[in-house]
Image (cartoon, rainbow, N blue to C red):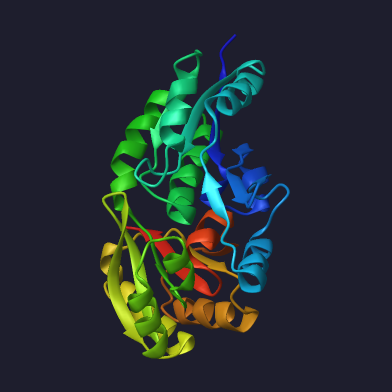
Length: 282
């Protein structure tokens, strides 16, 4: 009997429950550690807990990779249901999760692992495309070929409101964090060749910064695919998210604008009031 194709992913893809259910995408959660306690991202911990713990105790949650054994159990569940698995992983330069998934797949048959080269809904774009192809009856080989062309086209970036979380996590100096806060600098972090880089620093309040950021990123719509764009954020106000959505709608270009909340991985590193627009080029 022919095996059906199923796309699996990690919680870091930040897709909504409706999308995951509608496209039949099983998720394996990342681990989040606070002091001596380990949690599963999106299962028994949400970003609000991370923010509250940091603000009240000064303790920053840390993410950890999924063990190979967890992957093996996860994959076996769907192999037993007669599925051919294409697992798409968080970018390999961000975490060892990709290698863990590969190691587990080497113990099994019927599993292929893809490096998304990205994070959050930049990674989610790839997961959605693969799941749509699986739904439409494409083979694993056809999906892998398409993804090899698609992954380099994905554009992921975020504006960060405060550098406190990056500083606490050892990703920027105390001088840089203090200076940025005093000068109201909002860095734009961009994924370039599978790694996070500072693309630009905006100056001013978050609302003004986000308007400039949207105009900069969407300045040349002729290069961008109109199918869908994500607005992904960590605990931004409804008003702020609506302002960003309205600014994109005024471009009258995208067929679908999807708002999602960032999970624990982005939240641990970037903190609250982080927002990004994520799309892909033609």
